[in-house]
Structure formats: C-alpha cells, structure tokens
Length: 391
Image 1: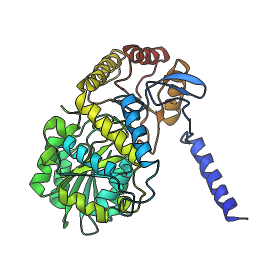
Image 2: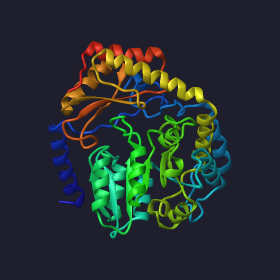
Image 3: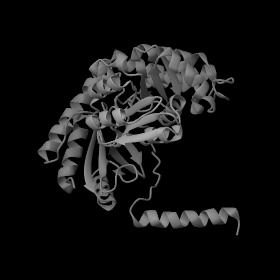
C-alpha cells in the first residue's frame, strides 16, 4: 500500500467519526461578490454569516484602489518583505494605520492568524508566562502554545481570577492576551479592569481587536479607541479582512516592538509579502472608515434593531457588537436550524465544536451596514417562523 493510500485510510476513518458527531465541514463557494445578498448553491440568500461589517468588501472605491495598484505593482510580491517583497504600498499602509490607531508604529501581517502566532512567540519564551482568556480566538491560543511560555488560562472575562494568576505566577516576563470583542459570543472584554490588573502586576497587554476594528470607537479604531485606552495597551492587533473588507492584519505598538517583529516574528520573516494591491485597497478602506462615520451609524442602527427584535422573540440579546449568537446546544440542532432558515432565504451558518465549546453549538448572526431594514426584519421573521430558540 502506498503512503498516499495509508493517509487516505486515516482520513476516511476520521471523516466518518466527524460525520457521526455532526462535526464534518463542507465548502460552499459563492457565485457572487461578498455582500448582504449572495448567490450560493444556485440560491439567492440574505447573508448573515459574513464579517464584512461595513460592507466594504465590494466597495467601488476600495476596488478601484486595488485595480490601480495592480497596474503599478502587478499581482504578486515574489518574496518576503525582508528579501524583495517590500513596496512603497506596504509602508504607506503602515503609516496610515499608525495614524488611524494613534500608535508609534504598525507592522503588517498576512492574516490575523499569522499575526497572533508570530507576535506572542516573538515577545515571550520558556522563562515567561502568558495569561489568556478561556474564550480567546484559536490564533491567540496557538500563539501562546508556540511561545513555549507557561500558559495560564483564566475564566472568561474574570479579572479577579486573572489578578490572582498574575500574583501567583513567577516568570521573567508576563504577557496578558485577550480578544476585545469575542468572535463567537459578541461580548466585550472588561478592558479597563484588565489594564489596571496589568499595571498592578507589571504585565504587558496584547489585545485582538479583529471584531472591534471598524465597529467600535469614535474613529472606528476598536474598543481601545472607544475607551480611550490606546496608550495603555502595549499591542493592538487589528484585521484588514473584516470591517475593512480586504485581507491581512496588523499590530499597532511601539517603534521598538515593531522593529523587533521584523527580526523575530516567524510569519513575517518567512512569508511572501502581502500583495501591494491589497495594501492599497486597505488604505482606501481605512480612509472610508475614518472619513464616513455614517457607515458605522448604519451598522449600529441594524445592530440595535436586531437586538430589539431578538428580545421580542424571547432571546437574550445585548447590542454590544455586530455578532449575535443563538446557542442551541448540540451540533445537529444547530445544523437543522441553519437548514430551515436557509429554506426561507436566510444564510446563517451553524458554528460547532471545536470552534465553540462542546454543548454550545449555535447560529452566529453577523450584522452589516449594508443590510437594509428589510433584510434585518426578514431574519427576525424567519427566526419566528421556524421557531428557533436558545438551548
């Protein structure tokens, strides 16, 4: 038997086990641009599963910036930024993002996953300790593991438990990492209290603003912007691929940290650089976020309308972010609910373990500025019609 046949047998065994538990995943290609209404599998559906919170993924302005940069730079960068993949577009975007974030410096990464798995090991190692919220994104979890530091997982949003762990854990360096908006629950970290805990115990703080960038804050720069904590947080990771509608990620930090990442963050050092046209598109998207506050106001009108409607259906819902989970329990129940909603024109994917803890499979609704009142009301009516209730 060939090596390929052996691997295929392993895969078949694992796929059968996943199918039996309702945990097998399938790909479904879109036949349309990303947007509030999409074509998938021959159906036209109202899309409530996208992280395109401001509707910028198909923005004419953002697309035009990308096309102009393709004409200038071509499609690929050919190498890492440390070889010959660096362009003026990368530096322009880093400078623009530093101004947006009110930070000394910004360093770009190819994705949020690459950023988090590169930044944490660049800062801490075996002599150190990392303190991680129990519901942090997988990229933060994996970044902690790759650092080889001692990892202390504290209960979700429990600052008292975090303070105890900081006080009781000996380490050369202590780094606290947390999402600001938790991607599967839509709730917000108690960031003021976390900042105070870090100050009291000499710890550095890194936050993941992926689902807050473009959504929260007076300028749309995230929870740190909203709370005025930009100068109190050592590292703020933001994404270019959600509310900004493009691809990639960045960290806003001190000049010293940004410089260190050039030499030590492995995903930065060893990855071909982000294409220049995506940098140009991202710069246009940042301009849109900062220059058009009505984008966020439209988003928040939809968020508030959806939250009010969910409460009218007996579902507990708070307008804290653009993410609304409806927790149903077992995978099969979430899959069935997603199927029934799709039958009435609403696309919302079932989220199952290991993305979320066992017993908390859910529908995850995401609101966008590009949804109309009619789209939001359709989703609420669909939930009422099919009788979806939290587990």
